[in-house]
Length: 599
Image 1: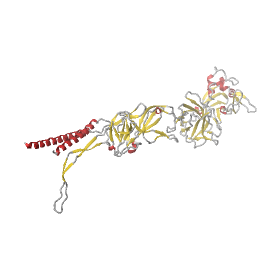
Image 2 (image 1 turned 60 degrees about the horizontal axis):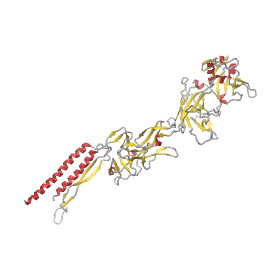
Image 3 (image 1 turned 60 degrees about the vertical axis):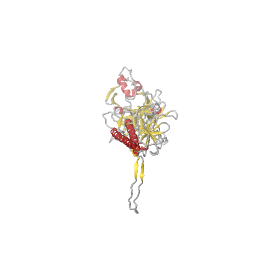
Image 4 (image 1 turned 135 degrees about the horizontal axis):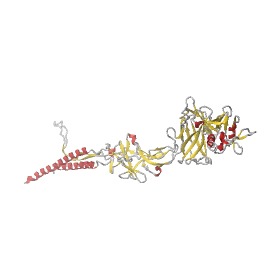
């Protein structure tokens, strides 16, 4: 039998296999992340009819090469262009991912890990990130909280399925406010600053449970340039109800020798800045920041308030300077004109009516008992005759709501210089503690930085205000948040966004890298399996950026099949197949001639 027949048959088989490879490539021209294959041929075997011989020095003959006749071809290797990347296909789906680089996604069917370049993912009914085609779970690392620092970070340990939309990830836990800043301009000529009530500064904050509150401060001018007193008036909840019946509020800058919160001011007494003055010749002619008011018609000859029908507006304005909504509460306030051994009680109205002497009067209640220091008034009836409003005895002074601090500004530059006379102290703390001893306190101490506030002329308008969080936005606190979206960064980090402005780290997609990626074994469904020649997967994986790669979202990797090359290979394969068929035809003709010799 002629050997050429077998050579032709082997040639037909190898070209048929090559056509099978080409056909598979073309069939997968639109398969996501498909890697094209190519085949190489090798010689099948040889029949040696004469072995090679070397030169013979004795006979003088030269060496001769071996005589070998080939018996056809066979498939040498089928290679995959696994490191050649396909083009990019835009999908707009946030969970469609493309790897730039040579790494592979790690997926699992529950019993083993597989590898793929197909990044078309979705989230299943229980929140797991999974392959759209097979439902296999995408593997990665989950966030862990450091028990010492409370910081949340990714620890690269054995890969796990990424349940990014688990019930606990659908909400963001509330956080208590721990930082705040007071910024803006404090104008010493602002009518609010020099008024009895002071310049109101409100600061919103959250507790550990996500409930919102507002701390209500007031900044008062004093009789010393650049020195102001800041007091905490109240803390209210979201329903505008004070919480001071349950919590003690204190503002302080540190602790005293006993370890207790120290009220900021430990020095002298400060009288609030002038607000109301009256004419020495006519005490009933009152001027408030340059605007005249006449209270004579609001009081009778004895200095008592008249009915509401007589000059009601004038009486209200005057009383409001001292923080009273009802004029009767102010004008009928009893004061002590004498001393401890010889008290002389009169109403504020009578004192203002008569002018009186130069005294500091302390208010009394209806029974003649002295009221707290914060209700004191200074009324001077000397040549200037000024009504200065309340006196804050800030040496350990404490209001009903909390405490007061002294704040200072440099009168040369207008910059903030410190608290309690300390240039090193630019922040104070707001502390809320339960009045009833309990281990449960929803509040964190809030450090409030005032260093960015300024003391400038701003046309009698102060812009000073408070906001939660430091200058970088940390420590703002927040309420409970609901998830509004998920984003995947180029390093595989997955973050959830919430309607309270917070973001939460949900996990990180791990990838696998192999020393010989071409050694991976195809498993179908765009999956590969590790083999001894590809290198083993260590069960941990790597960060995709560690080898210079990255992830892109909203896009997929397309097949890397080049149709023009495939069509060219198909033509040459067809010609090769035809030529091998001719070998068989011609060999058959020769055999036919041999058979015909007997005729």
